[in-house]
Image: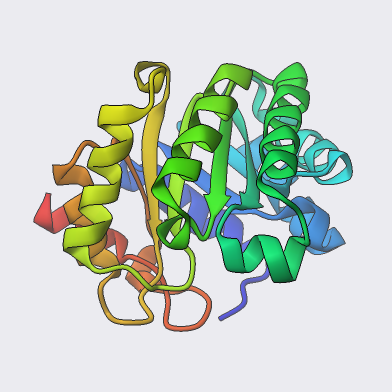
Length: 229
């Protein structure tokens, strides 16, 4: 499902009327159209934080900042970087120490632009918990105010995903300085169940979509999450 600029703005306004407090409006560096849509939502939609997605590289962060800047104090940049062994080896071709360095530096760079920074260790549900803990601590130290734990490939099951959130709450030394968020894909039909399990284990933000619409099999469904809560 793809949305044009007009449709995105219409949906953003409806999300505000529903009481949604953060809208991740797009990935500004990905296309001129996405950049314009995020900027227009940031300029016109009031009542919610407007967030732009960025890889852990300066050009992405710059684009996200320029697109969300019209929202002023209601702007957020969401930086992501893969942390699972399979992604580090085959996609990024980087060692753990390099990943931590890039994560820390990208968050610090984004923080120079705005105060509200979210960080995602991509493929977190397949990341070694001990390494995930190190990454989460590093990005919170660098200024991340929200740390999102994505089930990027829809791999998790509720018992283990909830246990991972609990592990982070119990072992990340600076966890009190950030909100733990979750972002679940529905490849195995468990996006909502995983999200609810995460909430039961201390998550304070759920990333979800209307009707669960999203890439591949979709994401956690906003309306199902709301009614369960």
